[in-house]
Length: 350
Image 1: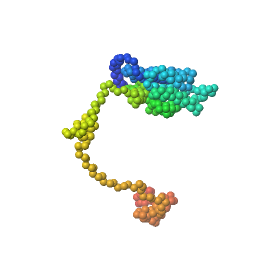
Image 2 (image 1 turned 120 degrees about the vertical axis):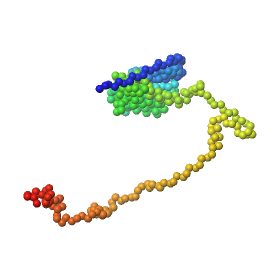
Image 3 (image 1 turned 30 degrees about the vertical axis):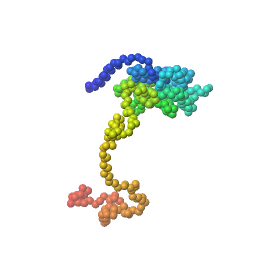
Image 4 (image 1 turned 90 degrees about the vertical axis):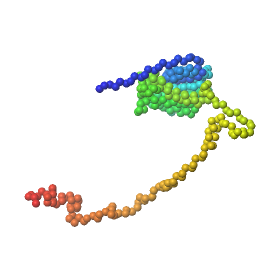
């Protein structure tokens, strides 16, 4: 059988060189090792935009559980205070948080009710840093992992984060559907942003390949562009935009030559509409009969019309004068043989 050869992907043309200038907008990315992949993907997205810089502030082994490793609310606040150009912030973390939380001298087991309450409080503390500084926050959820037990636990963390972020007015990005198969199971390969099947996850079943970085950033970039178009002051008017001049207001009386020519497009449309004859009224639509809300009421316990189940217009039953029905069906005796019939075994026949 001849093997079908998959057509090779067309080579990507080289991108034109972009002059390096001092970026006016900084996008800061905070989180663990997964956030590092997000920063790399976003850096590819804005590679051709010299006015935007992606700042990778990820710490590989960090999370919200171990404050002794990285105290993320404090780290984020200190960085934002010293970098006024940060306009948007991304957070992606939680892959290392499936471990006990120390609360004073007490150790709380993972995913218990007390643990969930403490973890929610730490998420809210980090979100508050960005809310207080009025920096739009996009929190990217965790993807499924090759380990089924780890995936279940991270899905629980996603629910806590989603609820806390959305209540605070932030944006939560659910990337889970982009990295599973049609049965909602972990998939190491899948379509990349260009629609080509590619390997998206590394051999450890946790991190992303370069194609996975681009797909991860694609989910985040959709929400980022939405915020860029809605946040006040984020969209500057294009220098090539033109504004239609307005006609000077006249303080004199009406002209003898008739109304002055309108220079506003909307005013011209109104004049044309006023000169058009009115359209005739549409013919009346014949009224349809009103359908009743319910059909006739039929009692379920009424008397039988035909006692015994016999049809009123059926043929009357013929009497069994010879007793054939009783002898055959009730007693089980064979009917009397008839001459020439298959059950007539008399010999000689006749």
